[in-house]
Image 1 (cartoon, rainbow, N blue to C red):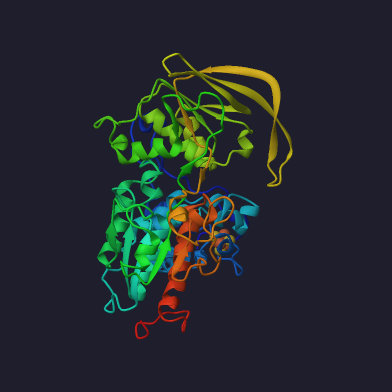
Image 2: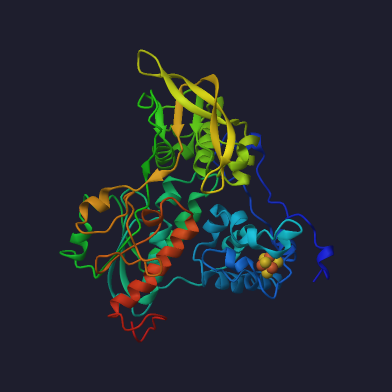
Length: 478
Ligand code: SF4
């Protein structure tokens, strides 16, 4: 190894190569370009291979991080990928979109003295560059029973991958016309290229997972019909949480006022990412305001910029320090020319006689005492600003879509409409019905949804075997 002592380690993470801000703000090409083998090797050398590696406890699916880095250090990327696959089946996706700085990297030992090991970048490198094992359907395919999965986002895909390997006959139902759920409609291609999602979906098809698009469970047919006349032995509901949140201020139902979900879905699924070669069907003005400062807000801001809006502003009622977006996303947005109005809260959207947006009145705020989550509360001041704008996008988080709850009699929901499921098994109160991901937890991360899908797969496998065996599910038993 190059470094013998901690004091010799480079204090900073090896830099991620990125596209130039001026170039990238005009197209939808991926911004982060990924490590080369030499970049990855140099960063891997910063890991001191702790005897008690705290990074693992920071990973929601407990990837054996030091072990995969050890394989990388001897340039055995296949073994590194196999190590990651034990816990996470989508390293190329999670390595791009997980908030590693608040998960594994936040727990990395060297992070107490310097920048932590860039675990997410190394995970992405392995996912992108290691040769995966050949995807072949298991010889005992279908013997475990029939399972329907509702939703093809990370929770549904995670469950599908494991259930097929256990021997289940798996069909994934997707409401939209393409597979991928929030990975596809919610995350722009400059953060998660489409070919990465398509590659993972193809691997699932290769091992026998069936996909049916344009099937809205709750409308096309119900969960009860899946377990009834359609003959499924179990159902896993991973439908996400896609209902938008609004503020209830005057003017918010005018033309060119969108929810982030609608805006991103229409752009990501209807040609926006091919701009300027295909026209996006969304009507966007010259001056856009996005309300909120999470990752979804950053996506909306940066998409609006790429669609050609000259002025794009973010309005957020707290300060930058409280913004929920990843630091990298904030930095990228600033570099691309987004203007930020921190400590400003929308009060009214100004609408003209034709019903078009003409501006937004915002109120200045200051920070008060911390709230129950420890974030300092915004306190209104008696000062107002009029922002000129013709388009407004709400990126304030999402709510449970009521369609599954309303169409599934007896399914237990909490007071916010999310499905109640066991934390370990993801089982709901209805026999054979399991649920996980955002439809249970509310909006969370890709890795948490995938982890829930894999827990559900394990529990469904046990359920399909009459509850006799929990884990592992062997070929003979299946
Ligand atoms: Fe390596 Fe950090 Fe994990 Fe220690 S905590 S094993 S330095 S990644």
